[in-house]
Image 1 (cartoon, rainbow, N blue to C red):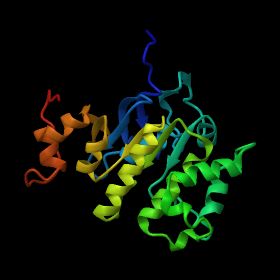
Image 2 (cartoon, rainbow, N blue to C red; image 1 turned 180 degrees about the vertical axis):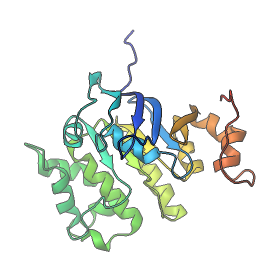
Image 3 (spheres, helix red, strand yellow; image 1 turned 90 degrees about the horizontal axis):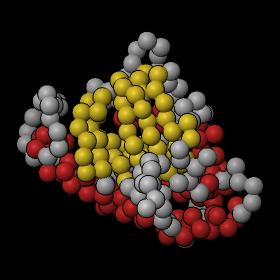
Image 4 (tube, one colour; image 1 turned 90 degrees about the vertical axis):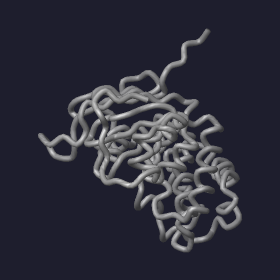
Length: 253
């Protein structure tokens, strides 16, 4: 039997944006190719910081990361992307002055061959974009821009896609459609690492999830376990009123 190995391994990440001031403290996560792993937590917990560190956009002096079994601790974002990692930041993730097709061409700039064919394949995943490839990105709705950002990230055939708050500021209907697209992309063989504030909806689609609090992993479990956890429910899912997020010592799911 073939051993199931993580697509991504992060071990003991600590650090932040300024030397000597840590935002993340000894964080470790694993992601498998056959799963969607979602990171939830309060604002300022370090979720997006961790995602930036994973893709090489934020250098960390302490901690290591492996991707497809290779130590990539010191790799830059371009090298991570070239190796099979797609990254969709929360903001400024499309070129609004360019058309849909031009955005995809920019996303595929590292390809040596097959650019036109890949554009066709990616557009077929997003019917709203496929029907108007020459439309400027500035004319798209918020949900359509997020789809374009994901489409652009798919241009290099990634095996892992990192999404930072993909449904932020979207309507409930647009969020549902976007989550469905994320799941469809995942089912094509792409591992998903996602940071999300819309916790309930994200957990429904997630295989596993972790809760970050004050730069540390406070809880982890399956998406279903998180949805039925009273602690997560009180803090994130609107099951009871209250402020802040507290984890009792020794809590597990």
